[in-house]
Image (cartoon, rainbow over all chains, first blue to last red; front, side, top):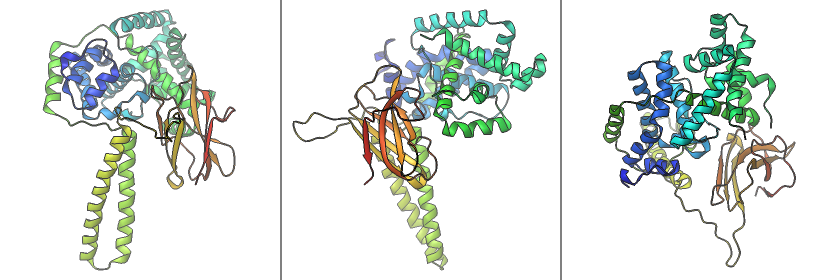
Length: 182
Length: 253
């Protein structure tokens, strides 16, 4: 199978099957579909284009070296890659060894992120939801998500009680989920 | 199956990877036995993926694509169709067998040379067994595998489930074939029926387009003696007790 055979409408399953069979063109297709998602979350966390590129390379190479890390029981490929990229970027930011075992990560989410148009619509919705959140809630969620801070560290920085921070983080994530609830 | 409210907030922190210390240990222990909370964890990770979308916009420089393509070309790989869940089992099985072999050789051979020779033989045997196990696993888990159920001629294929359970290791493998598709929000749930006590949830699954599915090593309490296995239809997050009717049931031989 050559790279030219991959079209935009080729399913993630077909791309993954190519990667599992050792077909290098499958990696090119994977990159073209999901590099922006992986790179943008890593860049937002790390604030450095070179470091974000390294995360991008690491996440994709892990899948090439061990394609069995992902299968359909782990959810959709795009959301899974986004979550893994965020974990790896936070590990880099906090200069720590990887704390989350990739093989344990299962991601349940709609919509999937395979199509550019779907991604763009979902992005608008997510930004709208974040924009509508009370600023204290958005701040707590962003500190936990993009800075990898624990609720204790956020509590120290903001002066808010621990329990309040915990509640804000969870309800912030649930608000995002509700945006896409049928 | 709902989320245990006392763990709801810690689950969000755990999904984010920021829960530490005793709270993390307690939650991980709870997750081992609670399908509802595991399902909520998956949902929270989905919420995290949505959060990642808020960053969309920047695209990597062109050189990043070339860098990846070159790195991939430097590491050519043969076809593989493994699943990590299986690979975690194989080394443990081999390691366990090797340990048993070591103990046996220790007691049976006082002569050092004999012991070394015995160990070498064991190792070679284990390597051969590992290779055979890899071949079996590769075939069983291949996404492009053709799965065929043979039945008596002129009999339409029926739903079939095969459960392979090793009590001492709490290890369970379940293979389903010819299962009918279910409506959204519904899933099949496998139950371990113990010799004493209530049915124990042993994994929720949905068949693929061909009606096939596998459940591999679901979380189970240690050392439960199974009398039978059964299947019901449940909400897709799973249930803590089976909803009647029982669709399929089979007792051990």
